[in-house]
Amino acid sequence: MSTHSIDADIKVKWAEGQSAYSPSTPEELLLIAIDLLVRDRGAEAARGFIDQVVERYAPRPATLNAPTAR
Image (cartoon, rainbow, N blue to C red; front, side, top):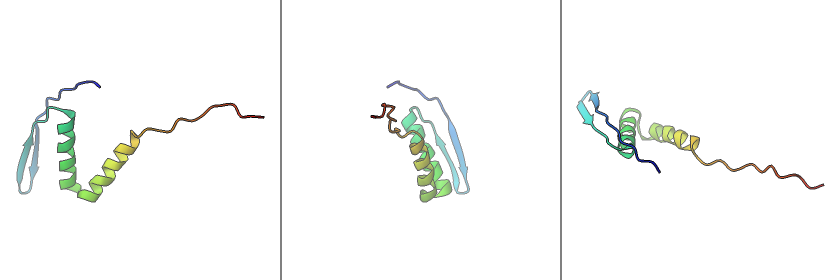
């Protein structure tokens, strides 16, 4: 597994105020993104989006190219 470093300064303005984030790892960035997605779209919509992303990277079963018996 490779190591990544993120240098980001995220500022979000909400009707009730603002938030600032400075993630340094992919995991922190993901948690921030999910938090923002849930706040903006709601839990069910966020879950649907996340399911789509996870499905995209899910392992696919290998197809067998074995010769058929005659």
